[in-house]
Length: 182
Image: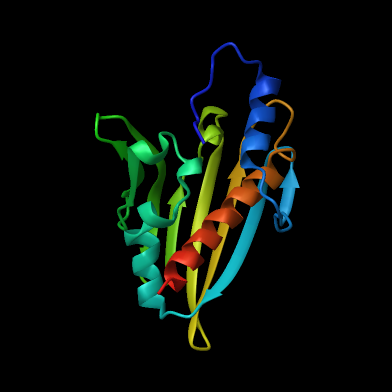
């Protein structure tokens, strides 16, 4: 998805474009949503150990994060620096860069917490917290991702919560597929 927005679009058209672009075939229930914020949560179990899942999460993000949900698509690479103050960043070969989120907490291989607003939410003046929790389960790892976003935007945030939920669910599904590939 190309996040560049034509300056001539109205706010309503931009919001509609975001909702349509972020729509997923099936989205899990939003945990909570109100005018000033929302919480979405997804979990999947994968048949790899937590340390392997951790390496895939932080070291393989460019291979599993959908290029439809970054700024420059396949022109760019994504990376996560798993340290306090580290960057979940996108970079192109010609010098364009975007910080999607900033790492705020690392407890490898259990928890990665990043702060910031993803994609179009940045331009809306919102703030978010994305937490990845990895826990041993049976012969694998239970991965849970929680994204909370809040702030003020005209019209409130309830309307965009389902679209963001779909994107977060898509990303977790892609990570699970990446970790499950032979």
